[in-house]
Amino acid sequence: MYSYSDLEKDRIELFSLGYKEEEIGKTVYARRISAFARGEGAKALIVGATHAREHITAKLVVDLAKLYKGDKIAFIPMLNPDGVELVIKGVESAPIEYRERIVRLAPNGDFTLWKANGRGVDINVNYDAGWGRGRTNLFYENYQNYVGEGPESEPETRSSVDYVLKKGIKVLVSYHAKGEVIYWSYEGRGNRKKAKALAQTTGYDLSYAYQSHGGFKDWFLKKGLGDAFTVEVGQDRFDHPYPYTEYGDILSQNVGVLDKIEEFLDDY
Ligand SMILES: [Zn+2]
Image (cartoon, rainbow, N blue to C red; front, side, top):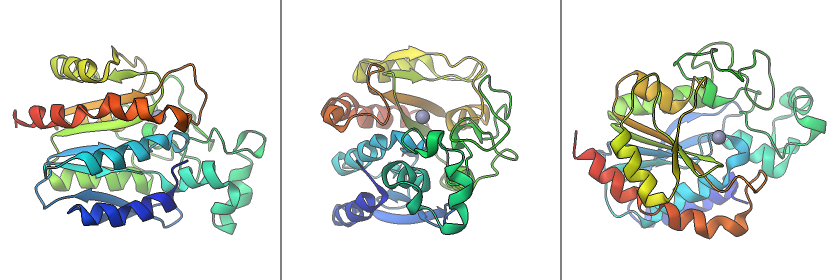
């Protein structure tokens, strides 16, 4: 399973491939949140591991970065390292002062299905886009679906928002698992033609997330910043965390996304 320590090791390889690391913020537990890009001119962003149990998407984003040759795409492989470490390493990965509080939030004290960040906020319902209006939103700390005290209350959310605005990012791909579907619209905004191009290269279906709000893609589209897509990798028949034995398929389905993003950037 792809942990924060794996990412720390892979940084060295990314450096050797010409990437520079930028610390875009710190998590609740003070871990580094990193973006990798060549040069300073990246205008597209690929994000992984927003949801803790979907850590296979961090591996995917790192491998896409390794395969990418250009300088137009930036990569945030692991937006939620605190959550990923909880899923993979358990409660001992959290600072002592948080342990009692979060172990009560995990079903039966087990972190296998944890989606949230280090204090029980689901980052992908914490963005400022219809905040708190989602059908499955919760208003108390939990291992999933808690929207937080307010829009962008979490450091992971703010780090990603600040990075997008600072860099002037025009195309966003946010990786999640699972379902092999692409969500591409929010409240009437979104580019269906480009979504279809992504569907064609990945083999995934297009879908609508009705009554879903507060996601990174939702915020990006609502702000009118450009094109944004939530790509759900992996088949629904497998359980979380998604089995790494199936990883080869996920990587091969998504390699073409790099070229598509470069094409999308031609519009800006
Ligand atoms: Zn997710």
